Image 1 (cartoon, each protein chain N blue to C red):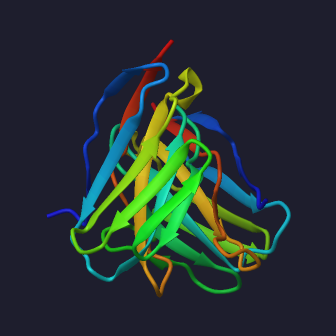
Image 2: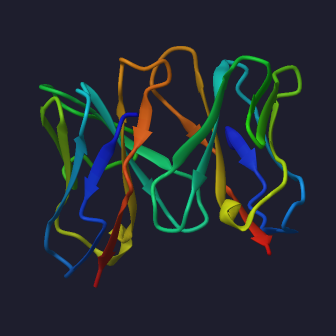
Length: 116
Length: 111
């Protein structure tokens, strides 16, 4: 089945620094990837939709200048949290659409970001 | 009102029990209904998906969708300790990629 690799799985950074999270589709090409955020005991909230070769589409309330998304190839999308603050600490999960499968949405394993 | 409502639990059952997990929703445009299992600090793993109404069975798991009541269920038979996880329901319309997730129900199966 389709596999989505997300890296790193955990990261701790200082306030004010930037952190990059990578999401790779390993055995399929993903023209569309999705970035979610999950707080403890809460549901996944879609942050943005990443489209290969074009600008990402951000959900209402998500700061595009703070959460930079780059989808430069058919297998890689990156999310950069810029000038991180403690309130950005969360679990970030990516998902990719494999159009070759009937149900082609596969999630990465997530990244636990802690900003200190 | 949230798009998708799910009782967060926690739910604790003895090994071998039948587990019933449920979600309700408000948007009649939802056509795809999914159940995901999420272990601690991991990404969601798809268990089952159903298009429109009806039942679907896969091994010990059965998914039911009642669109008239806007209610979906996941049944786990002969529950095992390895089933201990958080179960998320999700749904989306027939067009577009927007998923709507429940908050997840935490399940513990006690040996």
